[in-house]
Length: 123
Length: 109
Image 1 (tube, rainbow over the protein chains, first blue to last red):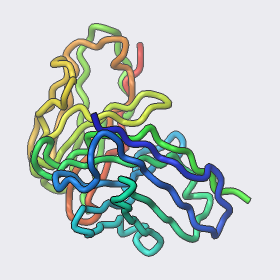
Image 2 (image 1 turned 90 degrees about the vertical axis):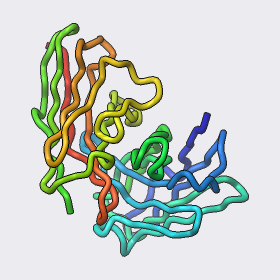
Image 3 (image 1 turned 180 degrees about the vertical axis):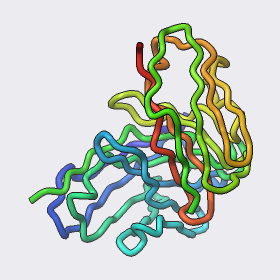
Image 4 (image 1 turned 90 degrees about the horizontal axis):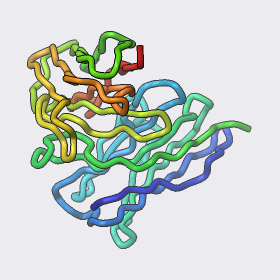
């Protein structure tokens, strides 16, 4: 059973870069059957998709965040990472990593979620 | 960008009652591109329904999804105590790839 675990600093200063890692266990991140995404949720609010990558190396980003996002992968560690630059208080949220189906077993839904990690942007 | 609207914002019901949640899209959405998630306080969302009407692994059959085009529905046939939560619809599109509705909270009456 695939499990995802987010990790990274819980506190980031304004204007700095937020860096998070998602470790995948129980399955290979190199599987061509899935995409791998980051999604976030400010406290008491809804969900916002941030971006995703595929094993070919292709990435897709939310246009509203595109200029500040980098998603990368380390297949040797079975991990993928998020970097969000020039953060402000508006980036304070719970950040989730997810496994996204690729049109087969569950069409295009996010079928596995990490537990989430809270990131606060504050000086 | 396709915008999803969910109604009602809050649904107050008693255990055993039927819950009907609506998700409306600003443009037509393919059935294969519509999913529903459940989120309980302090937990990550959980996939309930994909492809508008297919239940995810382990999801009880009291949960069902229906709809097409711009109107989709999640129905919980008989509410169990563990079903009181927030429900989000999500669509898979082009830019951005994923968008979520604002959610419907199902709380205990």
